[in-house]
Length: 123
Length: 392
Image (cartoon, rainbow over all chains, first blue to last red; front, top):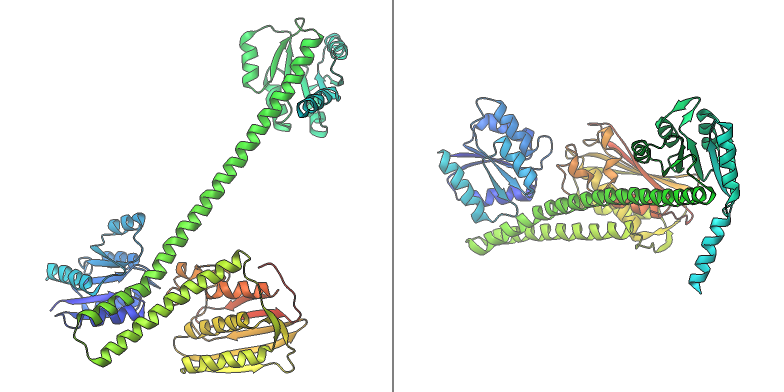
């Protein structure tokens, strides 16, 4: 049973994620911002993290850097949930070692496929 | 007819007195130059100095049309004088008059900014007059071209800035629209594709509805702000009892945010002010909903009103997350929220406070905020009682 952490600050999208994944065989955890997300990742050691780019406290890219800085968390792939798809931002994200992207708005099927791909890949 | 007028005008311009600064230390050469300038058809007024330093002082303090410059002076020699004049006033044309018939030096002089290079003893009255007139016209054209180029460069820079603002705006709007759209698309697909209970369908439909309303508010806010910023929004003024309005808005807020304690501290004998009731309601609603949003743990919110001089002073105080000092001004600017870590978590259009500032400014008043992070914020709005109006 793969564990997944989502970092997403919009409460309705948090709910959408839970509802979309409630019938999937994953242990889903959701944090409302990057700082809470980092603490959650430390605690549950997920197989994959999905993080919003624009978040308070610690944004998606800063979260990736923070994970890469700690040797015990550096291996965890991070998929960016993003509405911001500008090329420069994507290049910056690639440099930081982002594993993939899921662009908003995404459909539940896309979210499930992306989760399967990353959680299955690391399982 | 028009052409003849132009001709007459240009002849007239040539007949007006042209001031020449003659920089020449040799008295005989100076006398010759004066004679030549006096002998032609163009009336010149000649100011004669023998030293470069005197010439520079004169140029600094007087409007002169052209400089006739000898390259060999007591306090300078060669082309260095050209740069000295340029430093004092780059707009004054210079014609070099030299004893030295040296083609290389002549070319160098023109490269250094001289308009012409004349050789002493080879010039007569009309040639000198023509050289000076042409020098003045060429320099004028050069200066105009340089000014046009500067204007063009400024315009290009301004366009670049506007383009950056536009693309930032598009990217922010894209982000703000995609967030509610994600929920709308997601929940509607779940309702379409999955077997749900009736309660679940109702619940997710309510979520879709709330997000659609959020999108709609976002569009309304954007259009409102755009109308105010472009001066297309006019106030519908009437006598407004602000205390009544505050009480109504507070009532709405109490039902939508029951976990917050809302305290009203309304001043006595508040005279009616001349304002747009709907717009002032929007100001109060935005300030109050901000106070609620930024007090996630609940806590007391105080709304007060007082007459101060010719204004009503409204204060909205919360005990929420507060605002860092560097953001106190920026929060009133469009989409500042996006850029600030401290405030980005909060849902909303990011346009609430910019709208508040515009509406209050249209009423001739002012808004500002005081805050310390972690200790809550106080938002102030002053609105003139009489119908003072100001450009937003």
